[in-house]
Image (cartoon, rainbow, N blue to C red; front, side, top):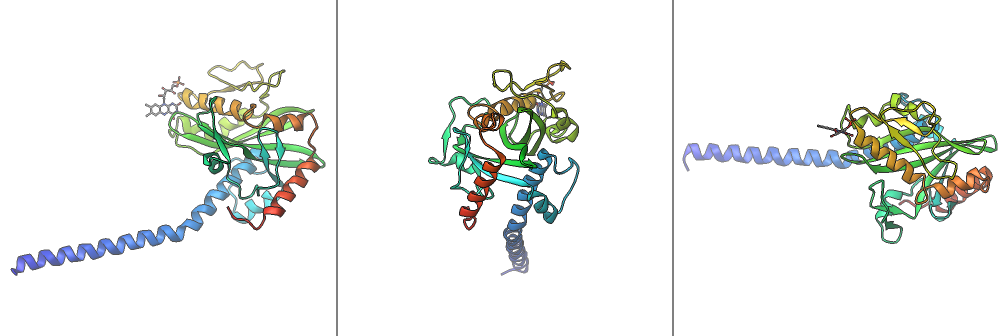
Length: 280
Ligand SMILES: Cc1cc2nc3c(=O)[nH]c(=O)nc-3n(C[C@H](O)[C@H](O)[C@H](O)COP(=O)(O)O)c2cc1C
């Protein structure tokens, strides 16, 4: 073999070994970081629940320990969306309602789908914050299509004199455009939601995102300038999840005093206790 050919072969061998080593390094890193990625995703979700609940500041960054400590103030539940009643056969700390939606037995396709989510689980998670022996906040997951992506977040309701009022909204996952649709994650825009009355006098969801807000309209929120399509998505998903196919039955039970804080606390403890050993 000529010297030239031999050196080309050596270069090829060297390049192959380097490629193999690099791919081994990348796959080892990917596998070993999986645990951290899951922990980060879980923390981000919990932090958003705490922020929606008003238990963590919009810009506040907390350690895993601090998040878990604060999360002890939250009563997690799995709720039958059709009846609005808590169920005890699923652990609310591990149940994934978005995975369940894709499952034939646990979810179903939507024929009326204003939020653009295609399928919904029969049971959804909900989180409650207590104030003495009263329900101070109900935190609900929200999900719906914007312009480019499905947006995931939480909204919180208070029940002042039994009338539901929005106290917070957060988004923890989406792929809308930075500076445009992605402004759904900005605290200044999220702050506009405090005090919005989401239901009309007949109990129908009425959230309205508008370019020019009427200051006396309690159901209106300023749409994001230059991101009308994302804003429309947020309006649709809010009205969907607060409606009959979403959490309205649960909201109605709480509003009418048919479900008490004690009932929810008991249901949560039963569900976590019964299913505490299961990992899903
Ligand atoms: C590159 C690019 C990215 C965009 N991203 C978004 C977006 O994330 N959300 C959105 O509603 N509109 C986005 N738009 C604008 C929409 O196409 C549309 O013009 C806009 O929603 C209309 O809103 P306006 O009536 O407030 O101007 C984007 C446009 C371009 C060119």
